[in-house]
Image 1 (cartoon, rainbow, N blue to C red):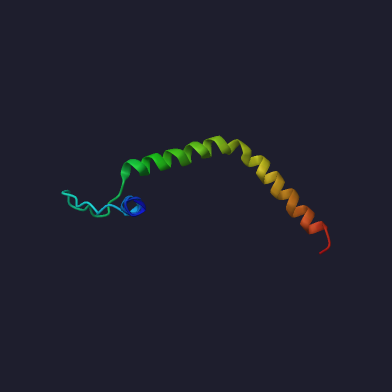
Image 2 (cartoon, rainbow, N blue to C red):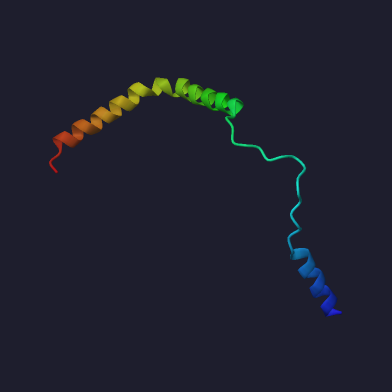
Length: 72
């Protein structure tokens, strides 16, 4: 009785055989739709983060000035 339970467990843990497909494989190609989406996301983030640019420049300048004034 324990043998049949072990066989069932082993059968369920095996991976199924790979299925063959009837569609031919595709060659690598450009995905223009995702290109447009990616550029749109980049430009959207650029527009959103552009107002923060002056503050980033000020923080960068302050860090450069403090590095120049502090002895190392």
